Amino acid sequence: MTETRGEQGERQAEDWLHTRGLRTVVRNYQCRAGEIDLVMLDPNPTDTEVLAFVEVRLRGTGAYVDGIDSVDEHKQRRLVAAARHFLMSHPEWSEHACRFDVIGISDGDLRWIPGAFDAASD
Image (cartoon, rainbow, N blue to C red; front, side, top):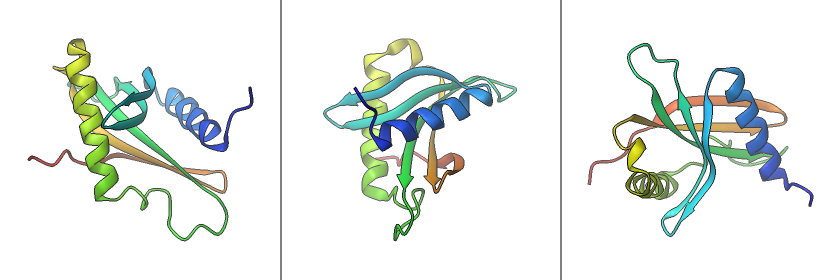
């Protein structure tokens, strides 16, 4: 079975994050609220490990909107809802600090924004 461009982009982002010390917890977590491309554990902060919910956006040449800019408020709400579901379904992670990262891949260039947005308090 051949990987789609999106799957290739997710794999590229995951491999790149591994080189920075992050470890994969879950790939392509899905629930009714939405999907999280990568759930990664970042041991790099000195005080505590951080659970990173990572959205990977792949854009080709001539795209009108940068991959990172395409993660609008609606997408952010869906990611937050999916992350909440993940934490409720996996209580072993519920005490970890969490953040939302976005990786944009365009023309082979990868940009990573750790803590790209916060979970809005409802």
